[in-house]
Length: 520
Ligand code: G4P
Image (cartoon, rainbow, N blue to C red; front, side):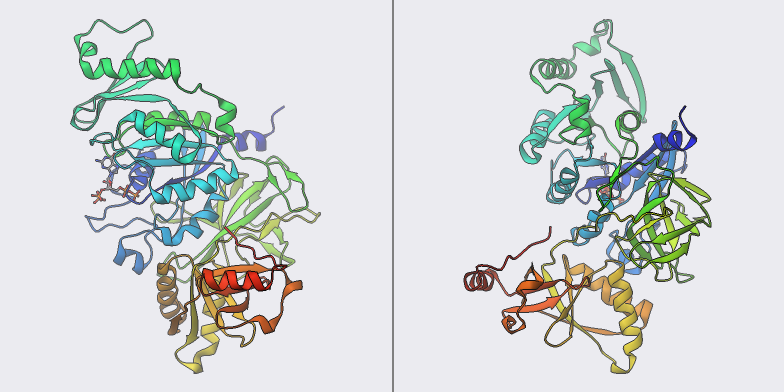
């Protein structure tokens, strides 16, 4: 018999959208929410022009720049599925945050602007989904505008990403002449009619005797589909499950064409929660009765009216009950879980129950760090550390007001535990050095130190650009110089910050036995 937990787990679809800024991620998210009746009008999630901001644009700095800095979780029901959509910041300076979010999903949706094809940020994020081997579903967006040819776009997936693209439907025209799509498996045509109307015509018994289907634009699409049938990739569920083939859908998020078809197929094909391997090598099944989860994101001050900090956890197994007790494996602390999630309209909603695959936000008074495992079992259980990027920008940091050391240290430690920047300590002096992937991380850090911790800081950019970790056996403090500064990360691991490739090679030549390791 299928247990209640198993049934609930089967309904979960936990995914994130990867895309380059402006490809249409926010627009398609909004259409998902409309389709699932979470919101009633477009513009609720985002309306730059109307001055309304998305719930995720909660920080002043985001408003000023019109970018989304932090991830939030949207949950909604669609058909019989419970969808957890993890939002990710689009700006590349926050790719580390996105990376961590992708460690908490079971599949990903890649949104591509059909005029631009695969852009830099998409390619970078794709590497993460590829590494994790999770299924990837593609939405070729903006067909209501002139774009590149559909053949070209599918080819680009193969050539640039190295995985197969399998068109689930095929566009009939584009731009002003976007007449609809041919759904290949269903053998029907979905017509794009004026005023966002859609009509579906079956082609199962052959092409109907309607002059419209004789128009060159239709004939061209039909012959391309024929070509795909004969010479294209064949549909392969195993490859899809392994992330080696991506089903490709064409449509327009703005005019809401093809989005529902996409969502219908996505909930059918996307996997329910996967097993997670522990550090001890055990495969933790989502239906295991003991609760287990890991922290992938810590977010502070989501509500400007009262200070709060929320640790977002991905449940890997079992069931969450409000008020339950768990162990934080890292700190050894027993914790009582009271929870809240953030829904798209912004009210905090208390979660009473959640199961494997779900994301919950836990109120945090400093008990959690990114990567922490919490669980209700008696045995030791730890999920692997979340990977970090190798930073490429470094600054020395100090409090402007030396009398305010307490708030300075508190701010630095909290923001670092949220993963907003990486912290290093210079071995010879004990000085703090911050590392980041993108300059905006420093700006957000400075802003938050001042606004949330009342601590004005001074950041002095450093010339160092290259970080390489080394084995503690090889550490020789006398090797530290201005060209290669010896520092420790927050886990106590040693690394060198090199000024440039020349300094790196020079060190390598002098110390051929020392293995220098780069993170991602
Ligand atoms: P992002 O979250 O991936 O950054 O993209 P977003 O949805 O904000 O979309 C970026 C721009 O592209 C927006 O226009 C949006 O309206 C437009 N867009 C999204 N999907 C489609 C589509 O299917 N067709 C067309 N033609 N445009 C689309 P904007 O003018 O920059 O922003 P806004 O003022 O409308 O918010």
